[in-house]
Image (tube, rainbow, N blue to C red; front, side, top):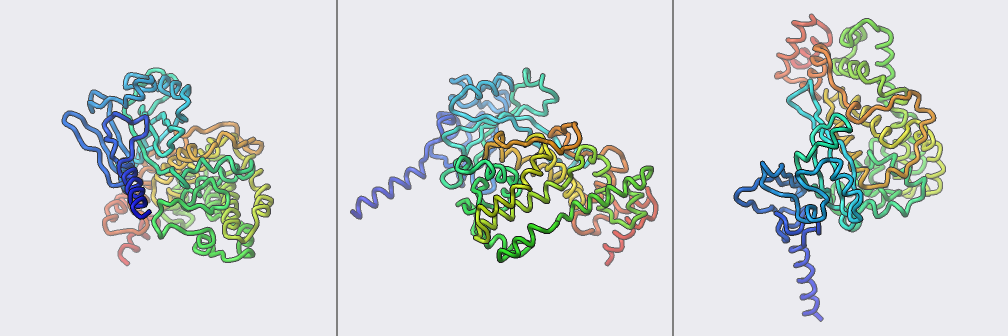
Length: 460
C-alpha cells in the first residue's frame, strides 16, 4: 500500500510538473513542461523575439507581428482558420464566434502614460478568446486604437498575447454563476467592481469562497472582512446601522463643487478655488467636473452609495449576521433603483469609470483609477454573464450614451494642464522637489493662497 501511495504521489507531482499546454497552444514556442503561474520561463531561440513574465510567476506572453518577432501564431489557430497575422479584426472575431471551443469578447484596453499628463491615456482595441474547457488563459489579439467600426474590416493584429489568470477549481468564477437566482446574479454583477478588490470569488453570493491563490494576509472570511473594514462591523445591528445611513463622502464633495461652478460661471476653476479657500487638489476636481459633468449626468455617485449597501449585505450573509432571504429582501429596492439609472451594463461601467476618474483626480491628478476600473470591467465580462442583467434606464435622465473612450478625462487647456499636473506631481504630500512647479504657478497666477499654502507646508 505504501509503495502504491508513493507511486501515485509521484504520478500526481509529475503531472503537475510536466503539465501539457492547453490544446490551442500545443506545438508552438512554449514547451509542454512550462507551468503557467509558476516561476517558469519560456526558452528563447535564435532569430525570434517575444516578451514574457509576471509579478508572481509566468502570467503573460506578448508577441509582435511576424516581421518583427519571427513568431507565427499557434498552429491550432492557423490550422482551424481562427486567426493569423494577415487576418482582420472582423475576420478573427467572426471566426471565434463560430467556434464551439471558445467564448469571444471585444475589449477596449487603456494604458496610462505617466510621462504625458496632457495625453494621459492611450487606447487599444482587442479581440479576446477564452477556451471553454480552460478559462485560465486569455488569447488576446491587439489592433491599436481603432477610431471607428469601419477600421475593423481592415486592421490586422499589431500584437498577439496570452494572459494567465488561475481559474481552475474553486477559482473558476463562472462555474458558480448559474447556481444563483436572477436577483442574486444581478446583485453580484452590480457589486463586481468592488468585489474584485475585496478578495473573494465574486460569483458566490455570500462571499464565502476565497481564491486559493491568495497570500495569507489577504485570506479573510466575511466576518473578519467586516470587522477590519473602515466601519468595523461586528454584529447585526452595526451592519444595519451602516446600510441605513448615507455615507457617500464623494457625492457630497461633487455636489458642493458642482454648485460652485454654477455660482461662478465666468471664472476659471482655480479662481473659484481661491475665492472659496479650497485646496489645490480641489481646484483639480473643479476642472474635472467642468469637463465631465455633462457626460456623468444626474445620477453621479448615487449608484455607488447603493452598491456599498449591496456589498455590506453580501458580506453580512457570509458573516452570519443576516439570512440570505433577509439580504435579498433588503436589496430589492436598491437593485431596482440602480437598474433604472442605466440602459445597459456597459453604460453602468462607463459611469463607474468616470466616477473613479473624479475620486482619483484629487489624489493622483490622473486617470489611473479610471484605467483600473476599465480593467475590472474587462475582467468582469469573463467571470460572469453580464448580458443577463436587465437594465431599463427609466430614470437615466439624458439620452446621450457615452462610449468607453469618452469616459476618460483629458485636460484641454494650458491652465487645466497646469493644475492637474500640480496635483499629479505633488501626490499625497508636498516635497521640496515640488517647489519649482509651485513657483512656476506663482509667476503665472500671482501669490494665490492655493500655491503659497503648499510652500508653507513644505517648509514646515
